[in-house]
Image (cartoon, rainbow, N blue to C red; front, side, top):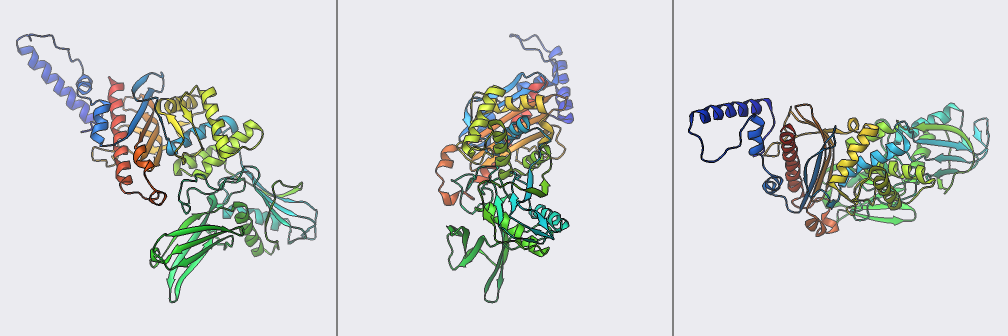
Length: 499
């Protein structure tokens, strides 16, 4: 049973210690020397389960590595296999946030611009109009509408030349992780011009003669139709989705047997620049601005900036990324940080290696080798001690802790505990049969800890087929066990720290 550090538990053990001392005083002297018990915490320390006992009780197969430090002193509180490299999953985003903050600064903005290569006369652009991405991972349909609104305010009604789209600020990546099923929205393409986290909204409803379907780039107020991505309903039961890259379009099919009466989901976009251009063109048409079909260019021509949209400051972007664990944001901010350091865009894998080198040289880490910035790729590795040390150092420099979200502690039955005396702010990470947690714990006595925990049954994960990776049998139950173990370990550290 996991023991929790609480006021009631503390008083109970203190009373028990007092009763034990009173009884011992009346008894005859023992034949062997007994260790004196001066405080209630010592009893708790004697009864404290070892890491091996907690891991065994969790029922987890595979590897568990963890490391916990006192945040103020840097002293080690507890460790178990701390140098074993493990897939960090989305815990990697905490490292990426640190890398981006250290490189770009908390006030950095991602700017999307509209350029006119010719002058504007009587509302007509005498040249090309360019939608130029600045690597903003948070640009949405409403942001494009804001840009179109600025064009309208400038009196633009027509363009004599082409409508160009450019995403060369960041290198194009077709999918974050090639080992993910094609239809999963959390592994979209990456570009310097992104929209709606590079996802398209697919909605269906059963009608009298089949299904009514739509593909759009919806926001709270707009639903512009999308043509670069199409969907066909096919009479079959499996596979649920198929994808084909056909003539520059994302062509999807879906099994009719999986649709039911209706529903919706976001699908990944593989043509992000054309996707953003189509949506911009549709919104512009609604404002009376005529544009031709978007064309991709590898570099933007010189031109006058006629509209611009800035993202929120990087610190806010990162807080949202850590809260919602958005993979595209992690990749964009990591790639942007590397471009700023190297002076040129690098591929996603090269950029991840640059981030790993930064962690080794600037933070003194030893066991870190990342293949991306989001943690989606299971080939990334970092040791628990290194992850904890990274958080310790970056928090001292940049104050990372406030950016992390609250983590709910759990009881022995793996149920969330409200008003738990230990307060945790951390980044979680989950892949199939991989679970990570890294962050900070505020203990009842005022002590602050920094820690990292990685659990993984990599052998079981490696046996999964591609079709099994969306929802493999047993994965959710395994993950719940891992979260229960994480809470038990944090409670153990509270006792060790107090003792």
